[in-house]
Image (cartoon, rainbow, N blue to C red):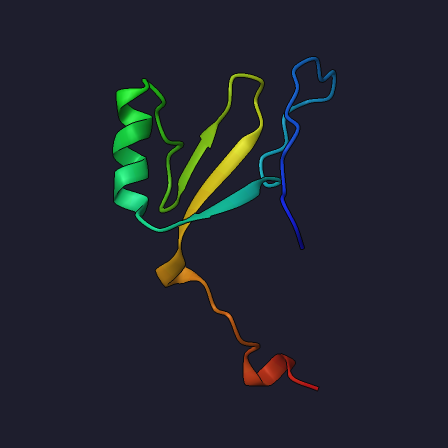
Length: 77
């Protein structure tokens, strides 16, 4: 798929979305949790490592160990 990037920007006029977000898959979720803490970024309440960027975009950090790379039998054709 080539190189990827995300363009985040401030200036939204809509109300914040509670559920819409994007996730970043990382090798070491605990290391990222520590880095976020050291940068003064507090995770949102709940079981996931979600936080808001300075413009209110919701970001979820997911460890590779929580990713399913194959389709579950109930969604296979």
